[in-house]
Amino acid sequence: MKNNNSSIAVILAVVLIVVAVYVFWESIKIFFKADPNVQAAIIAAMASVILALINTRLVQRRAVFEAHKETKAKIYEEFMSKLTSLFGKKGLKAGEEKDLQEFMTEFSSRIIIYGSPEVIKAFNEWRESAADPNKENILRKTGQLLLAMRADLGESIAGLNELDIFSLYVIGGKSALRQELQG
Image 1 (cartoon, rainbow, N blue to C red):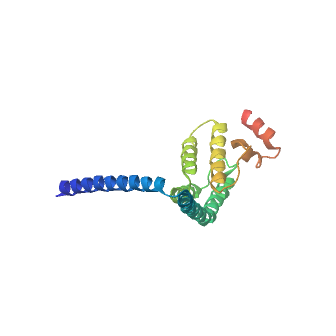
Image 2: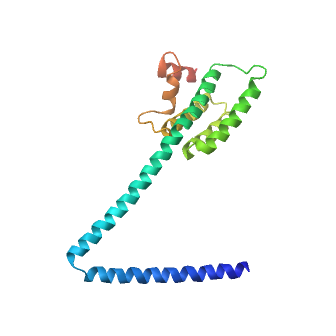
Image 3: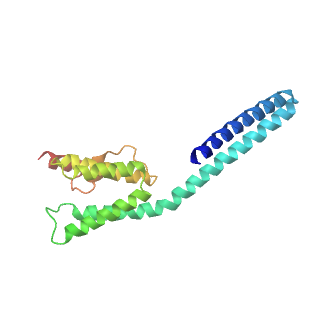
């Protein structure tokens, strides 16, 4: 039965394509036989319809972006808050590790829904870098994640690199950060 239905669907699709090509070809023949003023009106009408469809799609995309932007900002702010609370700590106190695991699980679920592909990729790379003994690599992956979040919110990241973000947290800025990474 299933095979019969798929055969009918294929035959129907082929018939529809043939009919569509025939109608298109006949329309083209009629169009070129028409008065030039009618041709101009048809072209103008088609251009208006196409532009209206494009504009509608762009407006829909912008509305979705704006609707999600506030939620994304809240999610990313919570992550930044958790991240900054961990800066400079040598270890976690009793109970903090479980809280951190719960936060990361919840954060992961939320960015799967709201994060852009770039944020999801950067987050995965950041999590993988957590076991890296190279402190600079961890900071760079964290910076890449933060830059991806910033871009996802529609903010410019032009001229910024992943270490620029951390220079805001270190007294002495970039030069102090580089010295700490080297020493």
